[in-house]
Every structure is written in structure tokens, then in C-alpha cells.
Length: 616
DNA sequence: CTAGGGTTAG
Image (cartoon, rainbow, N blue to C red; front, side, top):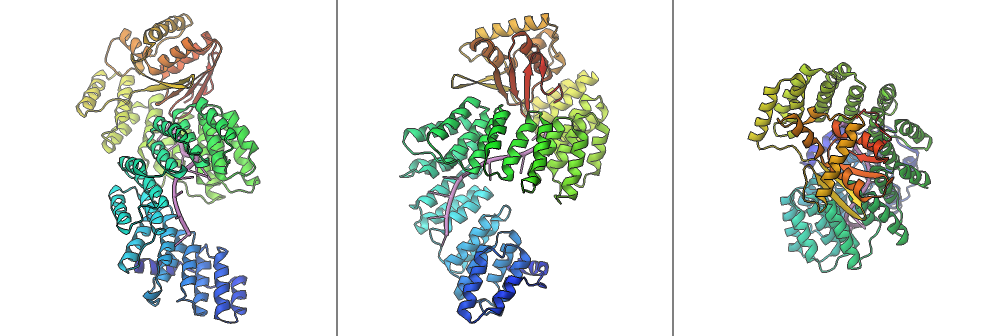
């Protein structure tokens, strides 16, 4: 990227016609250069220039006051910019040809690099200016690297990271703890960088809570939640006091594991250790309770918060959505503007998904319009995805197809799969088949796509075609993602996979599953053998269904918990139709409340019914 | 002027 390339574009975008009162005041009151500099700095201090027009006005004045070569003013100018256009503008201004090179110092570059490192999508420009800095012969200092490394973390480029690591060593900043911690974080964020992060971490002479958090965060990001919790335990053993950031990360691990008991322990730990409860930590607690199954507790925490951000609202709305409590989600959403806040694009995703899960089609359509017209939010693929899902769930497959054709952006595989499932469920098999073929052309190595096609052929009774898919999958070396179910019991997390025999209690568990099967049949349950992808006879299919990890986990829970205790399990896939129907019977026969977290949402089974009202 | 964190369709 060239500085000169950004400049003309930005200048075109700038409107310099109006002057604000403050600026007029500035120019009128100017009595001398010193006063002008002071006032100019004060103005910049107040973040006055966080929009392009204002920045341009300030620029005009800086020039008018003859301050365009004043390093202090220029640096502050760069630092004030919080939006991307403004940063581009400031940097192109600072590096304009009429500003002499002599005023470029480390501080100035650091400021520009920091501004870009903090942006969402322009971190590469931080690296660009880092290179400009070196080209100009301006030396980096120990403050430069945390900014540059943070930018690299955002880009996730391991080779770049390694070369920056080399520079850090070359300049001798590798003994600075801030730099070290940022390097651990940077490696954690790069593809395949976790080993390098761990090596750095292991070799660091002194680890503080930031170092531990960086490493724990790296594990959480990769989904290595058990290791993350392990690292947290180790941190306590070596006597480093966790702070609120550490707790946020441990809560993320709980969310991933669906570990409510562990999450509750973390909450009590926070109280006991008097960890400061920042808004972020509160939000993380809300998320943990909602996504680990206790959405009422999440609501309670939300109500008790003194200060909320839009993310707090999003967390609780998304939580309600997952539990199928759409009406509550909608009414909470309606409170947002009253609380003096503006809904953002993300909270709308939560809201639309809540409408979708609760069948609130008309409401969903209205909110979608409201989002565009009143809040001027341009819908993203996720918003369209929610709308498609909403129409599909309500059975309006034709309308969903029309909606996708009218969308201004191309549907992605997620939307196509939503449509295909709906076609499958509503008997639009021909359409489903053709979309699936299209999808497989785009994503030939994605296993679940073949499963969809296979299910469609099963429903069409095209057995030869179904067998052929199996062969294609085998030839490509693809396997179905093994279903697994986790369950927490006495501070342990147990994981079951289909047909698992590694468990110490497996004989009893399988006997229990058989007994459950007999009881269920007496109560009128019929196995849904059409869900089995394998080409085997009916009795074996039934057997395959009985080995589903979900049934193993429930049998394990029935064996090891007192009668009447609720059972909570977490699946890595969506619950299959057979398990769903079986679990309803189990909740009735064994008088247990069973809470299942699926890939997408929660199912609360009680007395033979499920909270999703068989709609998922 | 320096490090680690909370929300996102199925």
C-alpha cells in the first residue's frame, strides 16, 4: 500500500465547508504560536477529531496556524483518530511531501502504528508504517513492538510473526515482559503458532497474570478448553493471582465445555478472591450461564448489572434465543433504546435468531425492516441467514427460496444447508437434491454435505444412489464427524462417543441402554431407523441408534445420580430425530428433567415434552 | 505512547 495512494481518495471524501464553533473560537483566540499550539493540542486531546470532516477542519487550522511542521501537533493528530478514514487522513497528512522528514521520530511512528493496530480490518497498515519507519532510518523502541506484534496477531501470519520475533531479538527488546507477553499472544493467534507460543511461555523467566492469560487464551481460541482449564489450575499452583481477564478466559472454556458446575465454581472463586467484576467479566458470566443451561441465572445477573454495554444485551438475548424464549428476547430488545443505547448489527443477529427459534416470523420480518430503515444497518450474510432459517422453520420453503434469489449477496454454504434441510423436511426432494449437488461442487471436501444428499436419497428411496455416496465419501477419505456427548459429574467431565467402550462402567451402561430401550418400547416409542446412514439391516440399525453417544451419556447419568436429579448433557452435533424422540420418553418414564445442549440450541425435556416443541 | 478479555445466522 502506498501512502500517496490513500491521500487523494481521502481528500476527495473530506468536506471542509463548515467550521464548528469550537474551531472558530480557536482561531479567534489565537494570540501567538505558543497559544495556538496549546489550544490545538487541547482540542485534539478532547478527541475532537474522531470524524473525517472534523479532522479536515482541524487540518485546515493547523496549516493556517503554521503548525504543520510541529511534531507534537502531528503526533497528537494521529493519536486522536479513532475511525479508519480519520487515521488514513492523519497519516497521509503527516507523511505529505511538504512535511520535512526531519520531524519523523519514533514516537510519531509508534502513534500511527498503534492507531492502525487498533483497527479491525487495517492492521496490515500498521506493518506498512513499521516498514516505512525502518526505511526512514527511525529506530523502533520497546513501545513499538507491542503495537506491531498486536497487528501481526490480528493478521495471523506465522512467518511474519517469526520475522518480527527475529527483529525483537535483534534490537534487544526480548527481555521486556510486555514484549514477551505480546509475543506469546501473537504466536497464539497465528496459524500453527501455538507450539511457538508455548515454547516462549515455557522459557520466560517470569510469568505474570498477563502471560498466563495470553497462553490460556491461546488454548481457548483453539478449542482446547480442557487444557486451558488445566493451565489455569497450574497457574494457581505456582501462586500467580488470576485477574478478571483470566477469569473471562476460564469462563470461555466453560462455555465451550458446557460445564455449568465448573462455571458456578468460577463464579464463587471470583467472589471469594474478590476479583474485580468488570463489564467484560459480567458479560462473560452471563454468557456462561446462558450457554451452559441456566438462562434464568443469566437474566438475573443481567438485571443486577449497574452498567451495561450493547454486548451485555446481546449476550442475554442470544442466550434466550438458544433456549427458545423468543418473546422474552424480543421484549428485552425493545428495552435497548429506552436504556439510551443503539442496537448494533450483532444484537440484531441475536434477535432475529430468537424470532426464528420461536416461530415469530412476522415479528422477525418487521425487525429486519426496522434494522435497515430505522437503524441504517446494512444486513450481513448472518442476517440473511437468520431470515432464511426463520422462513424454513415455519415451513415456508418456497418463500425462503425466493428470498435467497432476491438477496443482494450470494448465499453461503450455511444458507444452502439450511435450505436443503428444509427441502428434506418438507418433501421438496427434487429441489433439495439440486441445491445439494451445487453445494457439493462448491465444497467437495465437506462431509456433512454428503450426509444431506444421502438423507434425501433415503427419503426418495433411491438406495443405489445412497450407497454410491457412501463409496464416494470413502474414496475421498471422508468420515462422518463422530458424535460425542459430554456430561459433568462430581467435578469430572466425561465424554462419550458412539459405540464407546473405553469407559470403566461400559458394561453397566450398555445394559442400562438396553433396559431403557425395553421401557421405551413399552411406552410406545418406535426407533427412527431411517436416520441411520449405514447400509445394514433394521435390527442392526436399531442397535446403532442405541449406541448414540447421547443415549450412553443419559444411561451413565441415570446410573450415577440420585432419582429426580436433572440431567445436563452437551452434544457436539445437532440432536438426531431418534434421540430427540427417545429423550422425550426417557424424561417421562424416569421422571427426570433432561437439558440437552445441541450444536445450535437447548432442548429442555420434561414429562415427555421438549421445550423446542419438536421444532429444531 | 507498551501486553492478555466480553456479543455474531445453522
